[in-house]
Amino acid sequence: MLGIKKLDIFIVKQFGLLFIGAFCICQFVLMMQFLWRYIDDLIGKGLTLDVLAQYFWWMALMLMPQAFPLALLLSSLITYGNLGETSELTAIKAAGISLMQAFRGPMVLSILITIASFLFQNFVTPRSNMEFERLLVSMKQKSPELEIPEGVFYDGIPNTNLYVQRKDLTTGMLYGIMIYRMTDSYDDKAIILADSGQLMATEEKKHLVLHLYDGAWHENMRSQSLAGNAQVPYRRETFTFKNIVLDFDGTFNLADGDIFRNNAQAKSLKQLQWGLDSLNEYYDSLGHTYYTAAMASTYKIPDTGKKDSLKALEMVATKKVIADSVLERLLYEPTRKTMNTAHTQTVMATNDLEFKSIMTGDGDRLIRKHKIEMWNKFTLSLSCLIFFFIGAPLGAIIRKGGLGVPVIISVLVFIFYYILDNTGFRMARGGMWAIWFGKTSLRQYWHHWRYLSHIRRQTILWCSTPMLIGISLSNCSVSVNIDISTVKR
Image 1 (cartoon, rainbow, N blue to C red):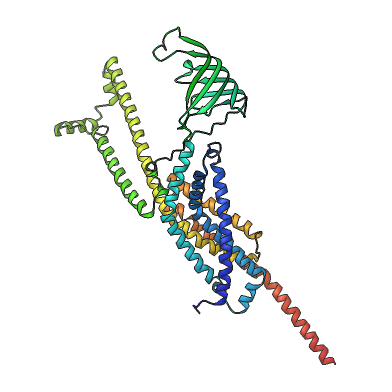
Image 2: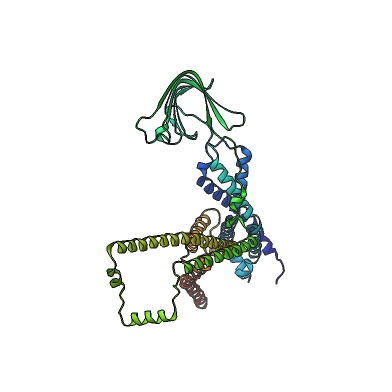
């Protein structure tokens, strides 16, 4: 009963081939969607092929855990949809084999994929996330490739706007040049006009050298030391030939990996646990420090003797002392000073508490991100198995194979799952929901689809029962008519 049968091999072979194809399709769709998200950081940067190859390689590794559940959902829908469409599933049931036995082979394969997905997220995905973030930050920091358009002000050079009326692509000459240079402020800007020129990059690609011919240089000489003077110095220079050096870093420098040490997505399960312990210890000590400082300053209880304390309590109990009456006894100047001092201390205490709340709030968000990532490694892996148990019964119910109805259903199911998961993630990250509740919304999703499948199955049985009764009654009437005619003869 527990041995491997030919039916298991047949279904697993179909399911495995469909899973490989569905995984490639899902991986491609996710990569294209992710590529369009960051397309602005790639275009016009002059990136080499090896940098682009690394970008797509780490992106593919980063998106593989998300492609696993979608591929399992699609492949299970197509597999059992094909079996139902070709009446093979009916033949299996007619042979006395239950549906769970038909699910046995792909179920074992789905469990293996779930375990592989967890191991992949724990060992491969953290490094791929870190390397992808390093590449993305480096691409954003890289200066754009120098491509001067005609008739438009080009602002790709730092602190410089360059206008070219016409350019010769064969000789590389630029004509009708106008340059606006902004340094410290608007008042010390420089305007450079030239009849023609040529732009070249240095060998190390750290600077640009602009050779200008027949032009003029207009510049305000205003600086910070002369900001208060009414007269501002002005310089005007005419030239027949002049070289201008512009700062322009055209090299690709990979960002340092230490800036991502607090990124929860770039850590394994063990590193997340170590990070949580360190963060909890640090922010607990920070909170204790804030508490000690507050009790020593803002909430400090003045030292009074026993006699004075009893006297104060007696005066308060008999209502002989009222704060407003004490304030009214003071003169105007002492009263104003007292009020100003109280207001200043209140504002300082409020600002100090706001700053401390920002510090502790950042720590709380960082701790929540680590906990969410720990839960995510388990829930995203478990979604592979859950999506199989959603796709296989649905495929057996709808009995439609191919890439038509299964693709539509799988997309709708995945969109519904994505909305639930993203809502839970945002609520858990913001502290509105508990982390375990925000990341286990997939369990509610699974029970919802099981309930829908059960209702659909009961509806099919309820609708098919009158049809079966009618068919059986018609068969009985036919047999009775045959018997009567036989008797008459």
